[in-house]
Image (cartoon, rainbow, N blue to C red; front, side, top):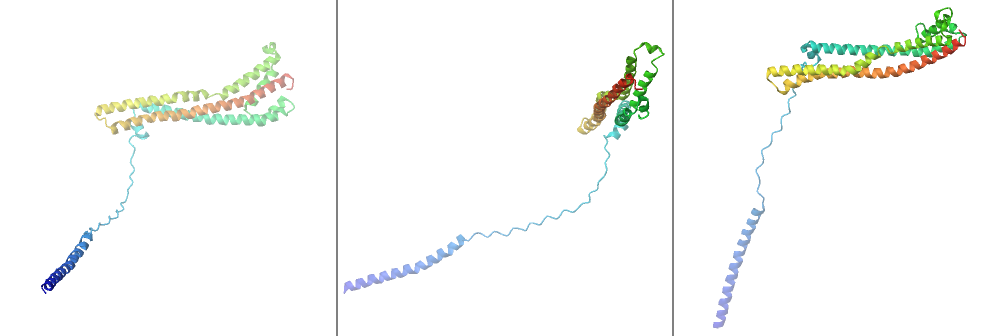
Length: 284
């Protein structure tokens, strides 16, 4: 009996302890379940203030204003002294003379080549040199040589040149006429050569003189900033550019005309040689 009571008391104590443990477990589980979502949930950031959209730039009316260049050719002429203006005038004369010679020589060479191609062909088809003379253009180089040869042939006898052999006399007359044609072709070529070789140095002289005056003005003013130096010096350098612009066409024109002169003179000398042989053979 006492053992039964003791067993009963121990079972009751065990049941009470189990009931206490079971009652405490749900509360702990609920507390943990409540704390986990709070820890897992991210912190909600406050909404950022909306950035205002940039206002569209207002279309401003662009007004273009013409600004005169204070260091151009106009200023170079207006502010230059008599040396600068004289240099510009000299280079202008050089340029105008060069272009005049180039155009006139091209026209003259074209006329001579045309006369050699058409008139000379008709000349050789005539029955005699005098008959073929009318086929040559008046004032042409071929007609001038033919007239010189015929004149030498007709006036050989009865004069002091009769002592000279007729063959030699006609040859000398035709050679002199051919030389006159060649001299006429080379007229003006020396001017082109002079312009081509001296125009750059004339422009360089104008540049040196302009830089000298610019540095004197800068030294007097006492201001050596870039706007005070670059403008006058750049203005003076225009002289060198003008000198090159004058020299390059003169040099190129000279070389081109020399080559064309050689082609013309080859035609002229061939005609003169044939005419000499015809006159010596007695076909007058």
